Length: 65
Image 1 (cartoon, rainbow, N blue to C red):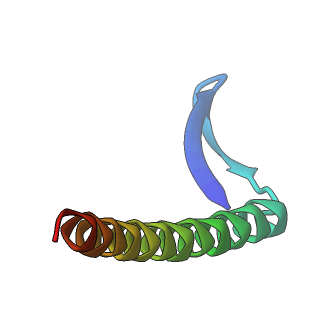
Image 2 (cartoon, one colour):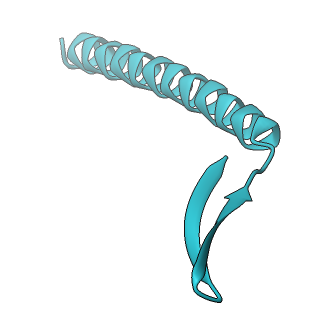
């Protein structure tokens, strides 16, 4: 809720503005969950890439020897 003091016809009045933030909070929670999922997927992709690189290095060495 936001309150403002407004001058009106020589007097002051208080204007209030209120809005429901539930939808925005739910959206933020969903975005945070998606960010966590993306970070997990990135970690898994990096681990898979590292495993692939190690495997290829070993296979390349074996093929040369």
